[in-house]
Image (cartoon, rainbow, N blue to C red):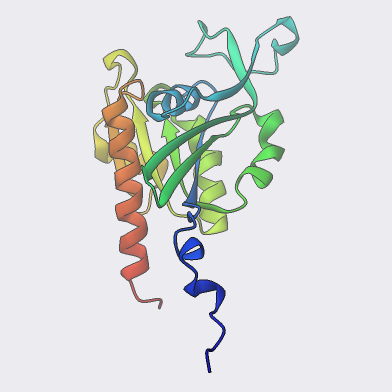
Length: 202
């Protein structure tokens, strides 16, 4: 007597496409450090951006020291995508940098596997909040030191000490406008996540 075939035995079911796994990575940092630029440099699609022009209303609210030529600001998020393989897609979410928009970080971080904190050596203090944010939530991250127009005058050890980084947190120096640097940051984050996964909890 013939037995009924299960749904998984049907050729059409076996050939059904499988949705790729999605990985969410958060890009954080202070105002004007290069978050929007990094997302744009590595995304395979035109990034979704929520930028608005700076106006007189921001005078006394946004600190433009060191970024006085900046004319726009992210008011919600930046969004980009990278397809690693048919089975894996990485989604990048850039956070707003101004303190008045920090309340959005709690929503954006939901489901994030890891993060990248961008820092500007001219204004390292603007990235303290982002580092504290990831550390307090136990979310692994790497640090990108964005070397604007070769203005960095500090050694890596000096920068690491100023940011009070844990020795195991990777830190890379480069230009976030360069796609290769963005790739290196993502690979460093993946390696960091794998190292943490392989380390016994204790």
